[in-house]
Amino acid sequence: MIMKKSLLFVLPLFLASQLPAEANNLSIDHYQANIDQAFEKMAIGAEAGPFKPNWESLHTHNAIPDWFLDGKIGIYFHWGVYSVPEYGNEWYPNYMHCKPGEGRRSYYEHHVETYGEPDEFGYHDLVPLFKAEKFDADEWAELFKASGARWAGPAAEHHDGFSMWGSDLTPWNARDKGPHKDLTGLLSVAIKKQGLKFVTSFHNERTFKWYPRIDGWPTTTSDPILQFLYMNIEPELYYQIFQTKLGEVIDKYQPDFIWFDSKMDLIPDDYHQRFLAYYFNKAKEWDKEVVVTTKKRQYPKEVAIFDYEKGHSEHLTLFPWLVDDTIGSGSWSYTSTLKIRESDELLDDFIDAVSKNGQLLLNISPKPDGTIPEDQKERLLEIGKWLKINGEAIYATRPWLEYGEGPNRLDDEGVFQKSLKYTAEDIRYTRSKDNKTLYVTLLDWPEGESFSPEILQVDALSNAKVELLGHAGELKYELNDKKLSIHVPDSKPFKYAYSFKLTGFETSLTPAAAAQRAATIESFKLNPPDKHPRGDKDKKMISREKNANKGTSGNLPLIVESFHF
Image (tube, rainbow, N blue to C red; front, side):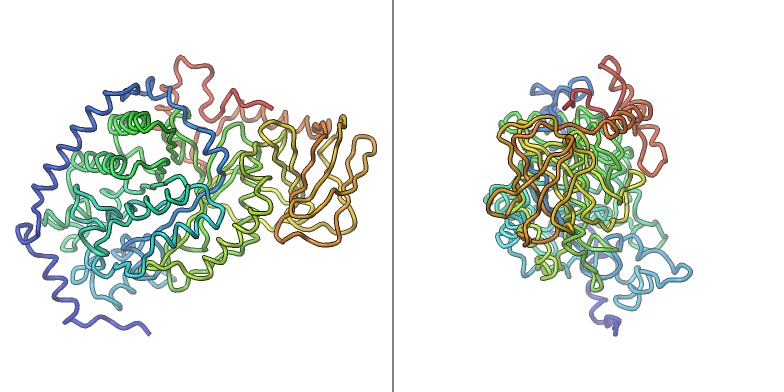
């Protein structure tokens, strides 16, 4: 039963939040001065190295380093103040300000019943309840390592505007409020200690337009301290805060990988260019290659990797891409009713993505106290066990001539797609980078004594052998008119999906499969997917992409022309 918080509990927190800025430990002038200094520092740094803050210079960056293509899988997590209610999803800070809708109980009603009206108990009053008292960065990092992940890190700042690191640019940060811990700093040390690349994701490009602005509620406050959370401030100041927060995280934690959400067009180009030049110049100083990803192709292809949110491509693409997906259903953050997806489904989607030139950033949903629920741990460990056996067919591989075959296929590409139920007839292909080994992965255990890939043609043999990863010894095979038939053992090496390793085979697509692949490539050339996968064109970003491509070979924003087999 949901109980409303007593007025004795609500009133002190509310009154404390309404104190004038002078009553806080640091005045807003302190943060403004730090922002000004950080902005100037980034302006200098953006010009000080080989990269300059313009698209022509930024195009010389290597957007897709081998460590990203080799690693294939990473973990990140939606965890913050929005986790405290354990209700709805990570958009709670927004929806709690929306009155009831038809046919469903609203977040507003939940908030009123649990805490009080938003003008009595605002989102900022949840901050002291986000304590992360059981958080153990080393324990998390060890779990990520055991899951088989090659990179990991936090949602450094979500739409709510609360910084999950020790920031000198805002009072609303995890070091100075809530947990009173530099969560990102602790994670950076622990994750790097496990030999993983460090990720920070940013979802705060929209914060100043995200909160509903209702007169008399905190989202329209004139208190300058509260304004630094709700971001009801002048756009120019917001742009500076957005840029300098990125610079602060770069300087403090040296992330290998920065991920962005989907409303980057709300920030003018020059702020993006300064950030990118600053980041790439810093990476040169650190002597390492770094990755930036965006949705909707919001940065040019020479600068960033394309990301599908909870989606896939229906085909093997001519460009590497990322999918960010989540371990649960219905919410990216923890809720008391969160349902966790099955390991089989998570792995099938991952294998499908890799076969199509994709990589996975998998979200988990920790509790507000800093613990990861057991069912989520179990899924991560199951993925890790599968990769320990079959990782050879995933890590450091590249796509084959076609992604795969089978009756269950996506009928479109895009975001927020439902997972399919795959069978043993659904086969996915990958190859070693030296092109000497082909991996044939069945998404379920085959019925009968053997199976025959439909689109694979064997043109020649040289000391050929077939093995099943996780099974001792070679497997029998037969070749009849270039068609391969592979005998399967009596027992399974593990579960979920099964990777067969072919060496010494010279392979190609059957004529019918080759013709279909050629038609697919031609469709990419005629209709490059340079619009948002949902179909609504982001005209400003497409215009930026086309202008950025002037003078380069071709004008196909999503196609990497040098990608060949």
